[in-house]
Image (cartoon, rainbow, N blue to C red; front, side, top):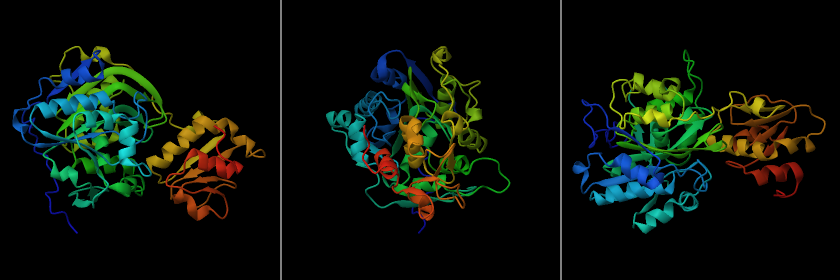
Length: 403
């Protein structure tokens, strides 16, 4: 059924008149909590007293604080304090990747503790039925299933981590809103067919489509410890010590890109969204406080373009998979790739498949995840959505993970 809501969502911004330049601020060197306070200190808050504010951090995986995978809890703590002191009703919500329990992830990441200390409710945004929202003029993603809390709050704040991403280049404030899509509907963005006449990955076009109706009113980008290389979860922590705040999510992402040593124009979903007018990634002429903010930039290592180079003689066949299986496989290979030949002693190369788009596979392919189940009779199949490392090892060895 069509959404009863305006498909443009609540894109009216209480912090920013789009006829004016966006508010953009960077803070550095004072720790996660104080940097966040400093970056927010000049944000106009007078128009939001009494309003409901939803803080959407990155708590999509149960990762420990400081790993660069999830939002630093002290960044979230400062955001709660600022909006509560402004007279707002503040909540923290998340819809994590497939197979992750929302409230458990918030506990492990340290975010639940700082929220409870401030009597700030935690919301499992997958708990209630989704709201379907049509996307007018979409290229590939014509409807989304949205977590209802996004529509029920007056202000939505995206609080991601500065991370490189193996499929989208970076994952920042714009892409973090994908975590407002309900349950497994997030997976569909990874399983779209190629677009006729378009060289862009369907995932990147879908994120741009999503951004036409789903953008945050405010972005607080956590660069305390980011993630370089094989993001979003298998990379290497990268200390940066910055927090970026912006009322235009695209411009905030462009600032974060520059701090990470790349350019937003090189990130397809940001370039596509900016070309459609959803925000700006051209920082020339914009006022960004302080003037010397680029002095804090540190180059982040990019994801390898070919995983067979990262893991020699292991061919990863990824066809219409989601980030849950991608991350599971990458973490498994990081810890166990050198031992795989113990289980494939007669093979010079090992093939691993994820995703549901495969028609034919090489002999003795290791098929990971339920989406590869159609090949289980002819290959080595590990079920799960996603499977975990111990399950993969159980199939290969018949015994639990020795670690």
